[in-house]
Image (cartoon, rainbow, N blue to C red; front, side, top):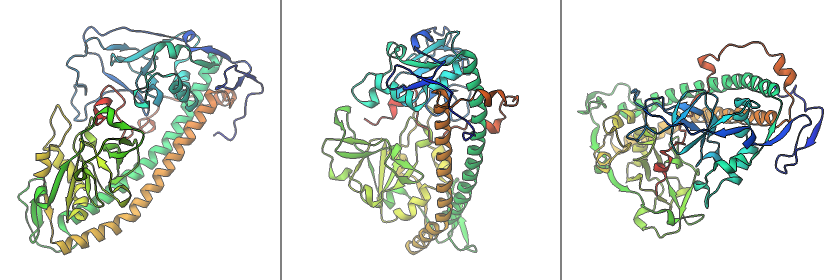
Length: 468
């Protein structure tokens, strides 16, 4: 798709150091000449609640439990800002990270956001792509105000001063048409690979579930477990509360003043990915940490509270690399002689059934009492060892295929980002390509952009996830 595209025949200096050269017939204008802030408030609070994300743009906020009420902690939505289709919605606290987008929905959004309406010289969706491109994200970060990255804010006057590369309006429309077409193709490939990953994960879960609830002997005699969601287990197995298996500890409470660029790493929900501890969105504290709150190799870390319900209950074993660090107050740690087996139980599809018994409508959490009294199947020690060895081997090839497919998806995302950036900044001329595109109807459901499964909350609840 990108190979047949060529640069524009003529370029000129934009006069803006960070923007460089632009096509000779493009204008360079400050955004104050292109858009204006609009602050219209809801009198009823009954309109569709919207959110903005760096991943999925502006979307309708839905409850995880499928109920009609919007997923929000606000007592009333009266006074929330109105949004019309084609308007730019900006999360001023996370604009530096790409949390700004044009809306295709009518609705309302947080009073902490800013809403902007475009003038006649601007095609909104051209600016949707432009302002979310890497070069503009970097510039938005540079002009945002704040002492530390997590507290940066993009104020309207700073946005207005930002320069924009502006093609003629018909060319903006051509660019949008081309990018819409390209986007559908890329997302079709991504969707196919995501479906493959889902099938592989289902296959993996079936293997794990069978092993941790039935063992490895297909002819084993079963008995009722006495636990509704667990049902039958091998007759020689036992069912124990987690507190009988080992020690459960709650994590470190710290304040914003304790956070620094170096010191002791604090593991949080963002450090758990696919049952493993990863370095992502790391936070360090400069204060002293009690020895009892330092993790050891093979400990199990469990997320017990989060702004995202999907994260509660997620767990990972501590590898040697992370031994000696600490963990936040929204996490709990399990230390026992059976952690190798318990890890597989906690990462099986038994956990959603367990979690559904502890969920509340107001707080996404698993209390210490809930966790300590969690019932799990317990085989004899020698059988635990065999099950762990089997699962480690049986899931290794599946994990390798998932990892390979995930890398392919990452490359597709990189390709998409590069293509959009090169087109909206004038490095590639798509006018002829756009003119030759066939007429297309609205994208089919399979072509729709999927939602990132572990997407961070990039709305007004984000602050709640900062474990400080």
